[in-house]
Length: 238
Ligand code: ATP
Image (tube, rainbow, N blue to C red; front, top):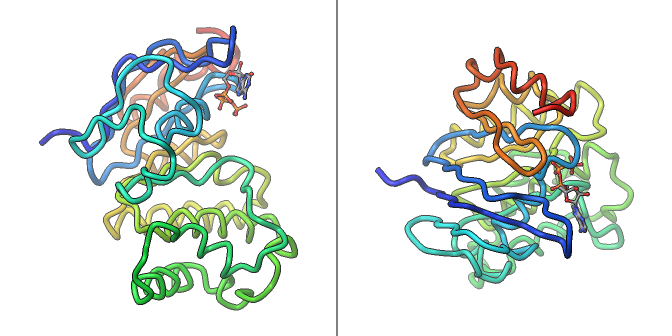
């Protein structure tokens, strides 16, 4: 079976800065795939390029059989791929329910929106409790849940999570990882960028290690956990 996502020779640039230097990877339906590497390795740039938030300088992105390389960001959620970005980016002066609604912009049917709300509120009862509160009043962990919840509102087939545990207390991190497992059981395919390497490899099927914009190691989670390339990637080597 063809992979759900297939990426060939992806390059991302910011003016003169070469952030991603021609990488190839794939994600199969039902997998959790971790993207690991030190700060600045190019992980966020890769995820952002997949959903059109930064331009693809060259290369090809194929999702669910379509070449989506240059598709604008607003077309990706309806196609089945959403990103929960690093740093949460919730709208602090909108309520929790309004923030979630923004993730459902592509759904025109009111009943379908209500179903999406219900699904997210079932996953995150605390968001239901706080649905009328300004998002800015939520704790960091709750804001992270809201960011993931918003990405789930369009019912994605592939969910990209950029640093979902960043800055959260260990107990909340555990909850976020439990949720990732649950989503996979519900049929969502996941790509996960994480600084928390051991937890990421604990939950992932496979992973890619990036260093200076290149993939320096790839393999099953257990292979990677013993890989020298993983260790040296975090020490700044290759
Ligand atoms: P982090 O965990 O710090 O986000 P990362 O692996 O996700 O690291 P990227 O954020 O993709 O790495 O950054 C890759 C390179 O691109 C870095 O050199 C970074 O400084 C640069 N970069 C990222 N975003 C921009 C931007 N908007 N403008 C200019 N350079 C950028």
